[in-house]
Image (cartoon, rainbow, N blue to C red; front, side, top):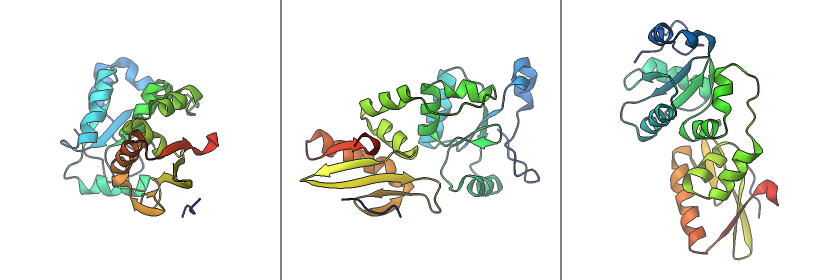
Length: 208
């Protein structure tokens, strides 16, 4: 059965550019040759902490823009990206999503190319294949956020699940109903639990 898809504050006078770190340019001479990597987030948000930890673990230099009380930058991010979820990761003036999206960029080697200004931003088949095999909550949520469609089979019936993070408002569709995008990880946890219990089977749409 297929359902229809239905740090530093950002300067208000330059709303089309993420902030730049003068300190980074002074301490790292090669930084001027790279695009600026900026993480917009809060001080205590779980995903925000995870993004910072992941970048630090892999040795990336980035601008840590904490915007807990910065309503101006929050408003700009919502207008620019289509939703108000944090964190938001920018390379230059382009937003590449949040924690799950950045995880894929780091995993498949795309992030260094983006920082060097190279044009190839396509996800690799190998990275997607590995994520599909993993079948973890993080892997499934990452793929759904990146546009993959999950088919859930139960008792001879089929139903699709997918996410629309750039919709207004951002949504995830599950069991034929739209849900706020913030519920994505919880929904994926349900799917993984049902899968492990043998109640359902799942496959990615283009695999059919």
